[in-house]
Image (cartoon, rainbow over all chains, first blue to last red; front, side, top):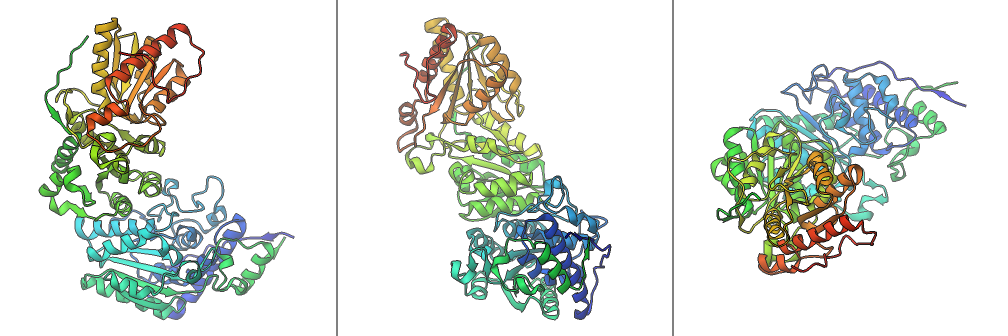
Length: 298
Length: 336
């Protein structure tokens, strides 16, 4: 048995939406994640599925300012994927935003592909701001970018950065947090994908990072904790960040987004075992079916 | 043989600090990150002149490295400096991924390097950075010989595009290069003419090599070609291969481990192009210790005497086509 994997040509506009409109986008992104990982035969399914709702709002809800036709537009907001292993969801998002052809998603992790296993800017993928993959470094890079925007270029650009929660065990995250608070980086929006899963098990068992919100408050952050699958909550969290930044409240902003690893696919749901695995053929068929696509058998 | 005169003593860190301040004058997008030791590595000169382009990061070299990458990805030319022990090793993963892999235009100053930092002892005496730094793709590595050269090298790495590491020291060292002499990244300077043996050195060992060459001529009539190889990467293949071809014997000298540094780089070039006997002067696979710089240079074999003895051994190996098994760590057995 073999299956015919096709990527739709659909792209989505970046505009203010009703919360109910994001479901369709998130479904498309999740299907892309499953398909590209199935074809890659390796990679990280769980976190990519778990953050699909956040990416849907961030890139397609008029939150981030960017121009796919002009990737290096000087006034763009920047996104840094500190959790570099979530590359599949970032690539799917960039494809659906129009930075690349969705069909290119079939090259994920393959020889000479721009879609490296972990993001690498030496491969010149438009829309990608930095390489990442060694955990904790992305948020520190994002702090450097935010310092540049706020103090040197004095623009109103914003920097968004997504880290995992297990990632917060890396000490550099807290060096970066200290610095963001010290420099009052109200142009920085840090999103924590809080799913309590990492390779070896539950974050609370491997090395607890809790209490989390209090830690960020102690570093002078504005903290918002949300259900990372509730579009209304995601949207209002970003709205709040933009409002605070617009009014120069002088505090970096963190969204602790409580999510489920593997969200959208029943057999991956809330299972840390799906941190670093791709679906096999049978699992891909089942997953895509749950995501509303009947796969054509060859 | 060309004579070199000492025009006083000054630490190379002064050259770095002054060069950086001059870069600040020339370019608006040069920015500096402080890691609490600004008065030691003299990023303080820049800080006083350009406070708006100076950011204190605290004692956090890892964070400083990645923040520098973020600034570079935003079109800035960030410099950060601390003790070499912390700007090459504490932050090595950040250098590898965020700086080198990103090919980010970050400039790293490794100050208080080598054993001549003195009384602070082994923890603060970085002797391995040349080796590590030169293995990173995209990274340029420079080790200036004196104050003037440190200043020129600092300006040069600021004006090139891409990540670069500059290594400098705490203690005053002889000033012998001219303010107006030519300095070009990747182009070694031949300081003395000679075809009997080549002495290829960097940093403070260049002056010791000049002294060794004078003694070799005085006592043995040997004309040594002293080469100041200030840029370890990209290495000057032409100058080294010419020296190997024309001299047939080489001594390398560096204030660094004998493994993997300048000596390793020279050996890679000659092994591929023109294999000749090489003797390696450097720290022989051991950690440093407390003491005054002069005492430590004696103790760890970093004086003109080791270079002198090594030159005689390299010449002997060349002339006898010796098949003996030498360990890279063996000390030359000649007495001065």
